[in-house]
Image (cartoon, rainbow, N blue to C red):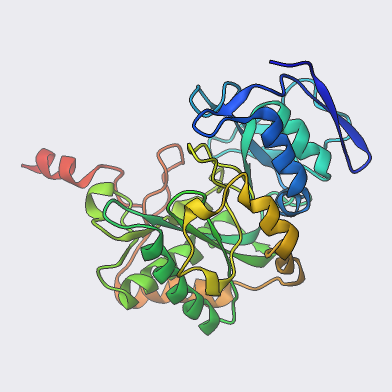
Length: 337
């Protein structure tokens, strides 16, 4: 598979083993192609990862092989790559890598990492979120363009609360919208803020949006996946490659691009040229930090005046106060019958 090569990035040398190993068989993209991609977008991907505890989604045998999530910092970690201790919902903890320079991205790519999953916190304060991440997830019968329509309504809704969002493709069929925050709120607060947004979108776009946790209740609608703001739930970072046959990438977009964009437009071959022309469209996020009081007041109003309550957490989370039963509705009906 070829002798190992050394790549230079920002003053560091990173060893790349087996550079000719094929990672994307459909298009013949190799490990070297992946490394060259991450070199081309290094500033952008690092902006999304910088100082953040980051889980690595590793595909050592390419996208057609087995993969796993590397949460704990692996053995042989370079002494220049810092870590932070993060706490899981179970109460256990782990030291997770926190990239601070471009070489970290290449080092991870050498391990077969295609997709980076950063936490919405920084290593200086792992308990307070500094990004609100809204995942608009198309359900069967809907697609990226349906998610884009919801994203535009979300943009208007955010503006009503003095907030601004930055959109990107998920690399699949979905749309992600990020809102930078002052790091003063907990994971619970962030999750409740997204629930409030999701419920408001349901009311504004009836039949088009859902916050239903159970798939059997979602229908052909865009699911606002509020649990992506729960502790230990992460979203693919900007410029992360995805494990899809065409090697698509999660790519920042301008709002005016959403209607005409297609996820297939943004991949390992096309994104570097786009990045060279436009730079990092998310870079401006670093200049902003918004507050959540308005959305948290909306959440409380929805609970107090509209009869809403807590929504289900993922199964590995402790039971929350007021959380409904974690039983699939159809099974619950059969049990009652």
